[in-house]
Length: 152
Image (cartoon, rainbow, N blue to C red; front, side, top):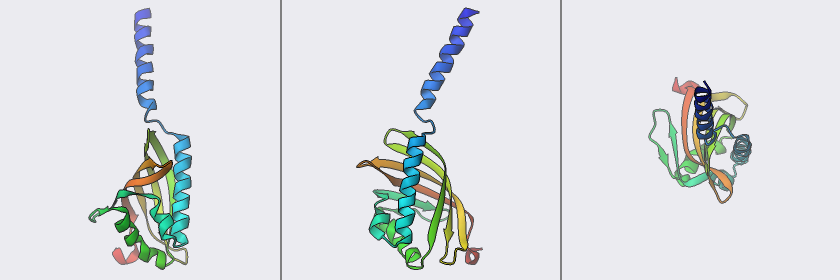
């Protein structure tokens, strides 16, 4: 009986140790939420440099049904017209799992036009990379669940 109990405790300990490397990390979650707030404020203020600083140089952005956008400059160029039209982005982080200098975030988003009307909402999965002490988006996969009216 003692042998079985020892094996159970040992197995549970090993499982716990293997899972903790990928566990929900509230510190990383808070840092990423703060970084997202910086990004959305820069977007709203039409601060292209501030917005760009939230992405790695080799970032990749993938929208549903569209070819991937590759590189920080391309991603920023795609967002400039939205900035010029006074659109805004609202995000909600649901989960963050960190492993070293990388973190995966799962969340939801809304895109709003100047009058506050939501024109798109959906879900995203983002791979963040910590570089120079700051979290930056390395990969972002977005899935719209409520496309804009003209897209329907």
